[in-house]
Length: 113
Image (cartoon, rainbow, N blue to C red; front, side):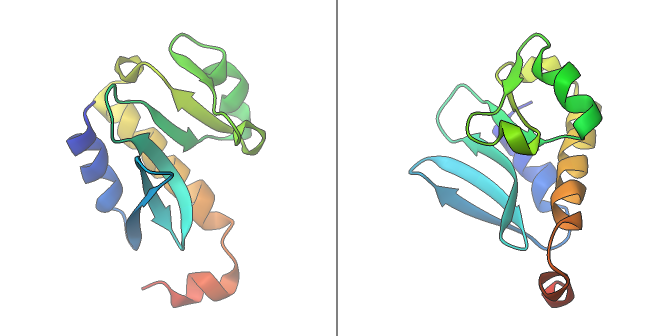
């Protein structure tokens, strides 16, 4: 995984916007809610939302920890991006997008394309 591939997967999803927050964090958003975050400074590390069922298993596995500040919302922090292959990365990014989108208010969803 590299930042170009990560960005490509995220920006191909409908209605995704990008923002830089906290100085150097590249955030991918749907309806102004983050679904994937990475630091622009190397090494590449990524935070994203996972299902409740996956959270305990993933956050206790090699190269992944509960995401600081947002672990209570079932976000993981992938410290070792080699932990997933490209297909798995795509799965987890799309899943995070869908989980966040599902929680958007109906008014916000109606404003999306």
